[in-house]
Length: 390
Image (cartoon, rainbow, N blue to C red; front, side, top):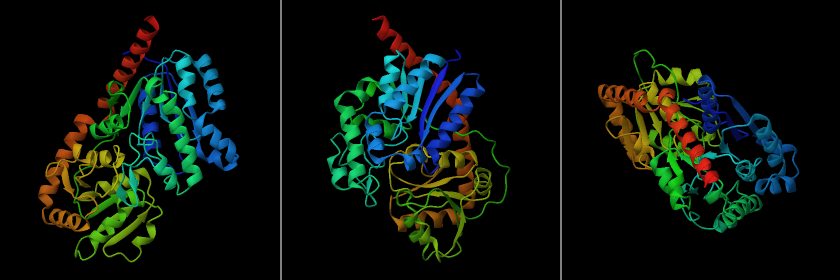
């Protein structure tokens, strides 16, 4: 395969999350295959020392990003430019700089920020699609972004400006959605269907050795959208069921005194994998439209079946009775029922774990992911060359 020169662009978050891990994994994979890589990275920690007016202006159009990218493109001469996150420090002005240089833009969409100020289609603990396909004025009046009307107004302004000038329609050569559900939602929100392709996330590690598995495991940020309150409620009244929770976050206080729950706090990646090698099932009670959680891929790689909400794209990977169990989103009683069944049928859960590992090996390794990503790059490059030739 051609060793494309690739420029990776990412705006990292103040609190490291799955998206940052995905960026790092793809970088390592591409470098491992011999691709020359340049990274343009900004970090949201910079906001702490940036004037409010400048941060607002840069969210809509960052002159510094345009200037920096012109210099990098001139020096590095990439074949393709792959964006992950531009909000808020880089801004969509970066697309214009790349396209002005005659280069293809590939954009992975890890959330729904283009159509929802929160990026989650979630409001007050419920799925909310009020802004999909519309100017997000409702999100402004409700202060959906960080519970702030001014900050919501800045974000809505950025989305509206770039919708008006055709950025989303004309400046991105290929969008990468993480699953079919997300692809459909993104198209419903106005993205051109012919430019939205699917490529899942991946992880790359060996399966753990067979061992005695006991108890349930939750791994993730302790926040509303992750359904941690649903999980704690489900544990009430269940005897002889142990749950280990790895993670920290704003909802951590609800774990205090919760029956049957051991709070492990923040763990290293290796410690998480160790926990996955010992648990009988991963519980994934999210109440928002998850993209493609790395946690689920890691669970499958660990022969760990998943008990997940029947919501969004999750049924695309967690097949009920095959690689795990599904329950009604937000329904603590139904979740408790599925956890009790899993506790009573360890052999069936072990078989689901083996099938989960087989699915991982077939679809979610770096070996499977690399040619998918390169095909997307090839198509984007070919399209731009055709435009120039035409």
